[in-house]
Image (tube, rainbow, N blue to C red):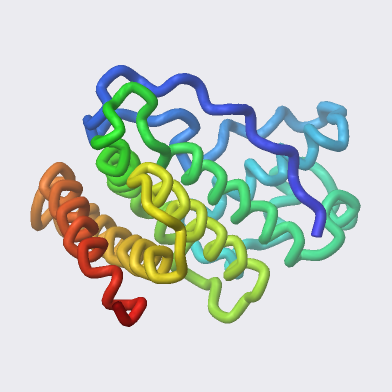
Length: 229
């Protein structure tokens, strides 16, 4: 499957390391406005434009509800020309979701200016803050309509694996099967809590982050039990 052009590196994060509401670089799942109609674009620019339109249109609907005809019309090109840039509809869907996943991962990184002991907390705070600010597009991209689609599931799995690797590295933990299982499952809990909090506001994002970090410490203290030790 062809890849869309890589995102530009995220700029330096703001100076408030644990402020859950602080906007991280490239945090929005939506994209900048499409290029003006009629403008001749390079192949890379046209791909970026089409992916950007998909990000905008999918901010409130599942991936398989996206109309290729509507995307082409918004870009001012024919349906056939869209398939010059993306061989199939599935290639296009995957490119759009991959772009959304890259934005999420660009946001959910350890803050560079906090002590090592706070690295995990800063990752969780960035992730929770991202979902809090972008609940509807997050749910649309990562929860609705993926089903058994192998390409999209691979993208979602890569997001979870990358987040798991970041927490293991920040925690200075050995990346053995037991620790990976534990942290990966814990991320599923964090995601569920973050979505519920952004939806119902039953607690605060700060309290959720503290809770999530404490739960992780408790789980990792028992990780040897998964190894039969």
